[in-house]
Length: 253
Image 1 (cartoon, rainbow, N blue to C red):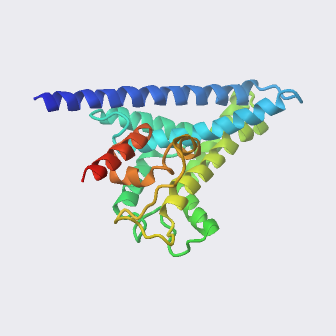
Image 2: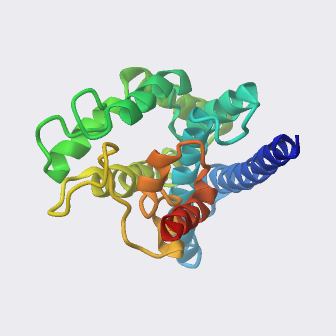
Image 3: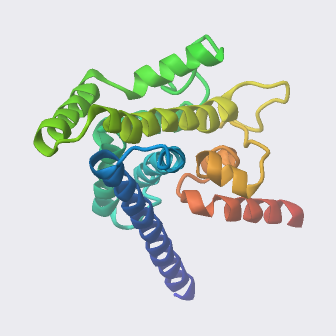
């Protein structure tokens, strides 16, 4: 009975932390998005600030995708499937008008067939960076998604008076930058073959970087990618602790 109560408490804590961090990321992303697209005044003095905001927005856009990714595994709010789906759908829509329903089965195929035939994230026979990235881009970006972005851009321009340049700089550029982060640090580096063999059937490596750099590059999905495949139910913010737990169990043997 005590272990059941402890487990329920841990799940509530995971939900509270996950939702709180998600709210912080979404609210900050929206603040930059709205300010940059609708209210930004360009001048020589504001240019460095704009560059900094675009870089931050790129990282936050990566965060939106990672939140949705946690939702796909039920790791955002365990025992709350509707909340997972709702938050995941919202984050992908904000990020780049992506479809949560379309990406969900694709991602679970990635875990089922990681690093081999049947994995939609795998390079499909050409492991070179450019070819692999092109396949990755084609997998996750559809004509429907491009149409939805176009409609939103037209609404911004003709409905609210936004400039196309601001839309590109404060939405399109961060979204494309996040694609690069997600691919390089969340797919290519962890799943490419190296001289050292993969540890197990998950066919993935964790990139050897410190926790701070791991957070900055891809919300821990580069530095702790193997741990994620070992424990998909662990949220992004819990992956460093998951590694410590795994190492601790290994040391006790």
